[in-house]
Length: 120
Image 1 (cartoon, rainbow, N blue to C red):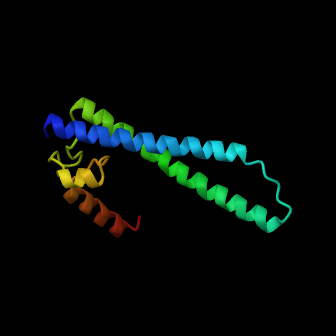
Image 2: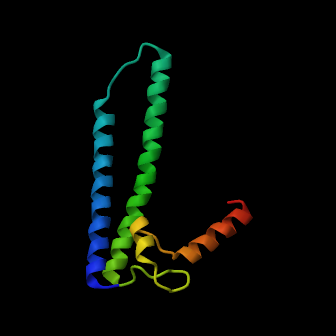
Image 3: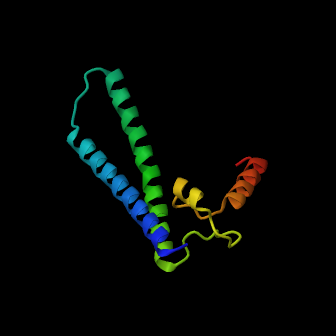
């Protein structure tokens, strides 16, 4: 992969990271500003359910942030775009679809097939 491609993916990953962190900050602001009192228990339950759902989404995004940061580190280390399973190159279309991936399509397909057999 040439330097132009690596810079493209680094910019893409940094943009994803910025967007995700911005969403997290907005969630924190929304949750700290919301000091509403609910007279109806059903309204409170709905609000708590929405809050729990939002927190689950943010937890998933927290995990995504770690994956993005690791991908940027791989770019800096010169390991980006190389399958961690077989050592072959990961195709550009696959990296565009999932820029933080660590597996080529063949190894990922094999991993998913193995998980389906094990029932994971």
